[in-house]
Length: 143
Image (tube, rainbow, N blue to C red; front, top):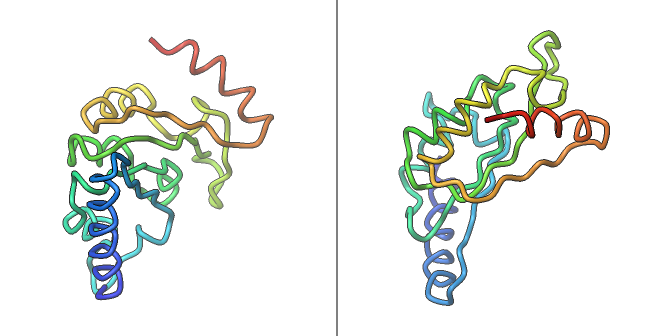
């Protein structure tokens, strides 16, 4: 965990320098930040250490495969997120197969409402072309 805290300290320093230059530093999570060290979730520890003004977050929804929901983090840490990386995952596939948005386990209505609380301004949809094409009607149909 000490290595993670050193990285957070470095990110804070870089984020402060970037902020002074008119640029926002962002942090994009992956699966490995959702592991635990000595019973403590790395991502939770990072959220406690990263300066909310210097380092904004992009939430990778993919970690729903590991049991972590974007909406929970948006509600727990209001205003800390600048963007979200959209993806959905099959509940039927134990390996966590990616599926088109709306066909998986993510509660998108709740996620998008919570994203406003989280401060999300940018939404990124990155997936294979077949899943992306099948996701667009679902996204257009949300109200």
